[in-house]
Image 1 (cartoon, rainbow, N blue to C red):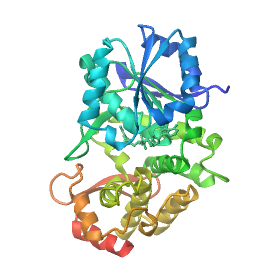
Image 2 (cartoon, rainbow, N blue to C red):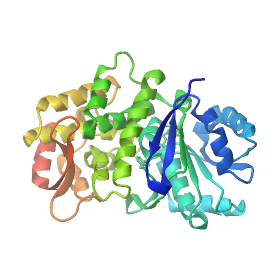
Image 3 (cartoon, rainbow, N blue to C red):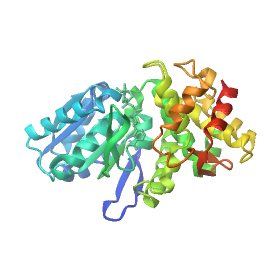
Length: 366
Ligand SMILES: NC(=O)c1ccc[n+]([C@@H]2O[C@H](COP(=O)([O-])OP(=O)(O)OC[C@H]3O[C@@H](n4cnc5c(N)ncnc54)[C@H](O)[C@@H]3O)[C@@H](O)[C@H]2O)c1
């Protein structure tokens, strides 16, 4: 098995490694042993993700002298709830989990966000290990320490910053992920390049063949994680540059809120949102229209929707979308806060965008 790539996230005493590639799980064996001092590994797992990989996980843990204790969940947005948090923390207390014991999340971003929040509040904070099994979770949600749940008021409104002690992003986990979910994660890699890594974006443009093939993806995952690690090291608590990671997300969240239930997935909304952010930037004379066309081409190569007409879950309507954007939690004071770009790799935070301008722009795109 090939040696995994290691990307460090430098946060002083809270620093940790992200192990990436096929064989990352085996390579983490000794570290898992150290993080599970009571001889058991408590794994909060997405059932769909764990089933095909359980035998391998069990074998690696057994090799480290650890027994596997699974708390199974059915992954998806609905588990990011007060109810699931209460049930999960109850089970952890039943197990008499101790503060020195790690909680391990095995699944996509939904399981990671819920389990991470449980780890943040269990006995006032337990170590936490991420084993992300979706591409989105490997390149984005497992790194950076944002954890949380949704409430009736909206997505991700209750949570904590709680950095993992280790992230094991084994690309073999992705072999069972549906292609649509793989593509959704790819949008976040494209986003990283567009925000501040023009060289990464050019590597994506240069990909020939299937961009979602695991061998092609592995070095790109490492690039995207390294990018995120740099941003998080600079701004752990999203006081400044970390907000750039929301490129495409203000438009994207509006589509997600207006889409027919269950029809649209996050990465698809983000893909279209990224292109809209660049097109809007071009309309404002901030960048070239060609930059938006380059972004569309890279996203479409992975089968992602780059135009509103191609987005599942519509039809969409400009007034409603603009109203949704107005309730985004990034807004402060008058106008909308958007992440815009002065070119590829040159994203910036734009405050006070007039809703009427955004609405007229969206109307022209529909
Ligand atoms: N904390 C952060 O910084 C951060 C960043 C971005 C997104 N997020 C959050 O991440 C969540 C989305 O995460 P996601 O896209 O991973 O969704 P998800 O966790 O719902 O997983 C997507 C689907 O893939 C299935 N699945 C997962 N791994 C699998 C595997 N290996 N094989 C087969 N099926 C598998 C799941 O059962 C689910 O149906 C959202 O709630 C979002 O808010 C958090």
